[in-house]
Length: 188
Picture (cartoon, rainbow, N blue to C red):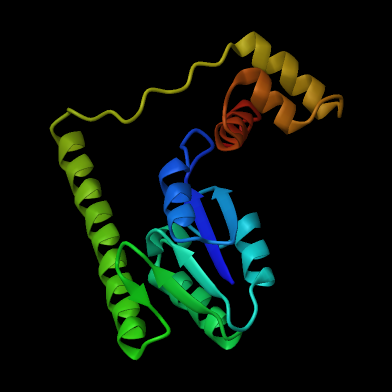
C-alpha cells in the first residue's frame, strides 16, 4: 500500500500542494499533521508509523516534511525498514528500496541539517552585531491588558478556568502565557 505523510508547520498553512502530489502518485492513505517538525512527537506521524506494515511504501513530498533533523529522519527510516516498509521522498528523488537511495537519504539529510544550523548561526551573529550597533532591540512585546490578565489569572489560580481558556481569551500562545505568569508571580 502507498501511504502518504503530509506536514505543514502551523494550522494556518495549507496542505493542498502536498495532497495534490499524493493524489497524483495514487497514494491510498494519507496522514496529515499541522505541527512543527522540530521533533517526532506528532499525532498523525505516530498513527502512520503504527499503521504501515511490511510491503508498504511511505511517500512524502520532501524528507523535511517527515523530520527536520538528521537523527530523527534516520531513526524514522530505520524504523520503517525494520517493518519492511520502503520510503520515498519525491523532491529529492530518494527511494530507500535501493542502496543508492539509502545513501542519498543519509547525505541529503546531513546537508539539510548542516544548512539549517549554519543559517541559525548566521542569524545569531547578525543579531549580535545589530545589538552592538543599537539597531536590534528584539521583538516588540505582545500587549496584554493587565486588568484582564489579572482577572483571568485569579480565576485560573482558583481553578475556575483552564490555562487553555486563558490563552484563548488573551489571544496568546501557551509559551507567552506562562512567561507572563512567571513575571506576574515575580519568578522571572
